Image 1 (cartoon, rainbow over the protein chains, first blue to last red):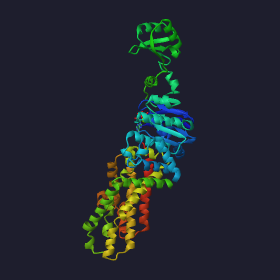
Image 2 (cartoon, chains in turn blue, cyan):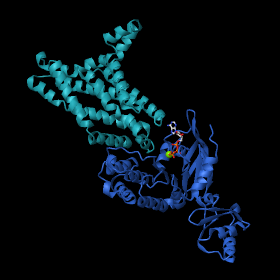
Image 3 (cartoon, chains in turn green, blue):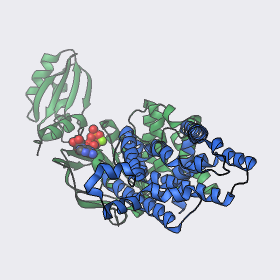
Image 4 (spheres, protein in one colour):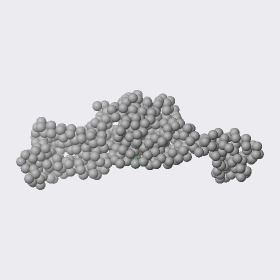
Length: 309
Length: 244
Ligand SMILES: Nc1ncnc2c1ncn2[C@@H]1O[C@H](COP(=O)(O)OP(=O)(O)OP(=O)(O)O)[C@@H](O)[C@H]1O
Ligand SMILES: [Mg+2]
């Protein structure tokens, strides 16, 4: 549905996006991650036809954004970074305008506007000028605008930025509910969000793709993947037992009598650990297997890459 | 066309959603009154026409029109709404024309609200109303020309003050290009054919007949060409500079 074909963007001496290629199929929710300034927003601006690529191109539903930008824009719902909107319009007038631009009139427009309002829970602020909306409501209005025409492709730049925890949850539910019928790209700095809604994650750093995997696959790259976290009153004894095991790479103390046993090469060590502890008659209050932490993998991947010119 | 109308309606509504419309109209009417009655000696002239009224329009538009046009694109670029505009299924041409037409229609409203002065001459004497209508149309055309210039300049910058100053300067040149002052300053550079050429391109040259109520086809073409040229440049500027 979305094909990114060797796309690059330079701003004078700065290379913001450097030969990025990937496809997103219908049914996929792609989490687009990367440190500040990595080139996420720039990539999205090129897919949506706002910025012309310096080289390469993007296609949406087969339409090339350089040759047929209007066809692409019709099929895409886009929430730009920061959700820019005309401050003097009311929320309702704004959605009415979007509906008209999208070619809906009369009853059809009204149902679509009503649906978008319901899905983003905007009913209370419809008569307010946009400049008086709080950050979260503004973001939701931007989302309503992107969803209004029920597009095949959704591109959302930090859709949950500024939302309260309840709204974050609602928006994630919303994205999940639409996932089956659309190709969706969301950029975010919230890694739990990636685990919650994305079927795939791409990490870019300094304009280049450095990882492209499922969230679980990414987490599995973590040093902590399949490691065992224990809480005990006798840490010294437990530490000795753990250290003697062949598949335990390291044992670290995490404070409060908690110990972490890392797995060698990410192997499953829980059976080994529990058997050994039972045999040693160690007192364990809590034991959990870790899946790995995305933030750690993220840090590892995005700092390892040398900055390129 | 449908899209141009949609953009037009949004823009038009935004004039009246902010104090811009009211401030502009009040100042426009007040200045017109002052110019016509005090500076132009409307009564002392003792003639039933509106020449005193129209002859000031180039100078009035010189700074009022840039004040109106400065926000057209500079504001969209500064607040980032241009990213929304340009990722909706609208072309740069539709946006430029929609915005321009809204600003133009708005100027038309302000101009139409000067009708009491027309009522006044009709009450006092027996003017040539055809000539007055022609002069109104000419004035509107001139406003359109200035607006196109201002809209283009506004697309070049994110800063409304800069947009205002540059647009006012350009409009001043358009007005004064054929005047003796400018030709004298240019001196040798603008003698003979060059001077004639500059004079033929100046707004004054084309508006002076119009303000007397004579609308020559060539004058109309001049303003239409001015509008088309700058709107075209406006589209090019938007396409190239939108993200800068
Ligand atoms: N108009 C521009 N002119 C010059 N440089 C730009 C422009 N837009 C973006 N850049 C540069 O391109 C790089 C990528 O920016 P981009 O906004 O895509 O990052 P991002 O991944 O979205 O970051 P963030 O997480 O902070 O939103 C940055 O170095 C930025 O300074
Ligand atoms: Mg960004």
